[in-house]
Image 1 (cartoon, helix red, strand yellow):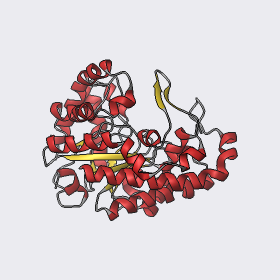
Image 2: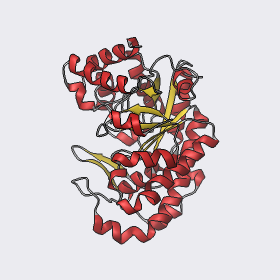
Image 3: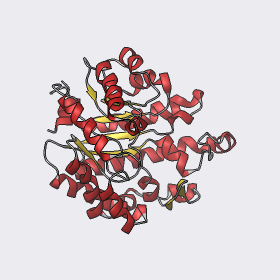
Image 4: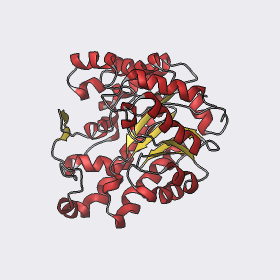
Length: 336
């Protein structure tokens, strides 16, 4: 078993494991070199050799305890027949959602379209040291739905009018989507992923009265599926504020990733009997080293008597200085 899985399973709490969301990405010059030659992001995710190489890049630089496969949560809509492109300075753009085409998908066709992702995981697992975890991931159903049927405005708020117009169909779409996410999770585990993270990046957009149906229930379904596969699962319901407490009590993931808007002391006092991950604002890494260490210490001290995995409250930003990240990792590894 790897350091991370042992830690999550309570078998080794002697140190804080460290990894970062988006650790394989644009802040690394070696990644930018590959990206320059591969402008189509989806095609890059489907290149198993390059995806594996990118996944391992940060582990060659830093003393990290886990790799996270270089891929994207939107590979699932792609596997279900939607065209996915990434517009510079705007983000992902998906072709118009067609319910009939969506429901006509089959598990075999879906798995075949995403086969290169699973091949990348297999290739990475072979190259990775046994003590290092390989994290697979999915977007939670609601977050994927936000992109698939274009439910947010350019200001990143819920398009209430559109939401109301499609609400009658949402449960049916979510149920079907959840089944394909289970297939995607299972395929990643079979390929060599030993931890799964579920990103509910737009959970904050769910209207309060719908939080149970669109956040807690779908995440619980996926968490129970991961547990049935004896695979630890990390949940990240970003932006739901103090509803994190209800989330933990209902969904019961092995690990909860907190975002940077939560006070770590509130988390310590309210999210009990669960392993905590993350929290620090990635923008702190733009500060001088003293300030970075001071902020990291705040989280390490808050959770000094708890199971805590060091990460951030969101992914690493493109302008992050790799040297500052290396300095932070060394500090965490040396702090007892």
